[in-house]
Image 1 (cartoon, one colour):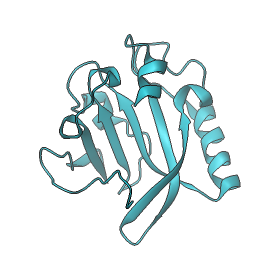
Image 2: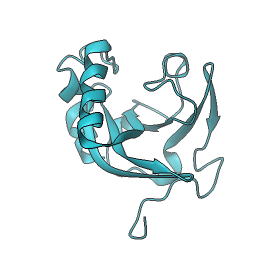
Image 3: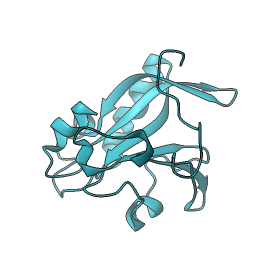
Image 4: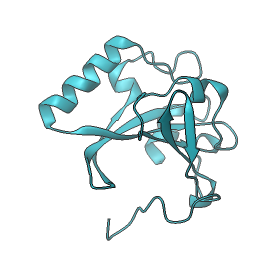
Length: 144
């Protein structure tokens, strides 16, 4: 969270892809690649925008490391709800992809119950898996 806060400077959105392993209904993040590492201009409009060349770099990194994108995270200035743009432009347009939204530009503290968690269904449809709606969907801790 601190790194998203730092990269966004509390002025604009910031984002990161979580890379790791996925299988049997479980995802484990082991690596992170921030959007501005893929494209230095990713935040230049104030919101997170990535183009094809950034995704080409991402897929190359995944292939070389034997990892997959297990989720993406980006910040919002207010509440952690999906914008129309978020709904219509998933970072990974594959059913089952997880997108997290961190409220208040990730300024500490970030209560778990305020994080938005959305699972892509395909065809621009999403399941809301946020803690305020679904208990126990996301676990971050010692036993993960």
